[in-house]
Length: 176
View 1 (cartoon, rainbow, N blue to C red):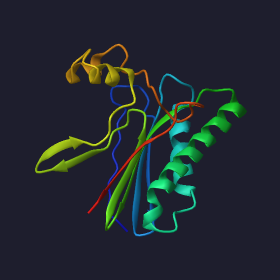
View 2: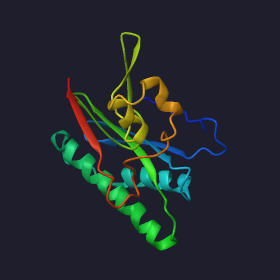
View 3: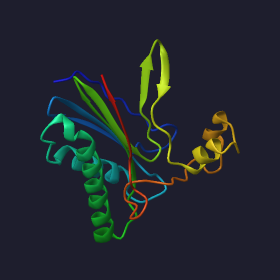
């Protein structure tokens, strides 16, 4: 079992819609963070459902299948939210960042604007790029990186879970 610590905060909002979790996988641990979209209904429930779906997914048979398994598990979590939306008539949506760590590799995937950071040599480095309109503006040179958090489109996501057409994750891996 890997030692871990989770901390979330509402970030200046009235309600915290974050959900976190972890689970053992063959050869390692999967760490999860989801954040319900506050502009949609039932964001806290959406993020909790995403984490529960990822924790309940049948684990991969071996470490070589991590990338395929992570993508498939995220697709299943999206389907859970889509079914809940159909049943409730709400537009539940969530972001997700997932990190699978084994002795030999790190595999991560994300959808939305929840981020994965890495600390190396005392520097905080980002490993994920937001799926937001503001981040796209930054990448195109319309705004600076410092302006992303204040941009009028900061909360407009290009991808999220609970979205029927724009929910595919970005996936990366590093072998040690």
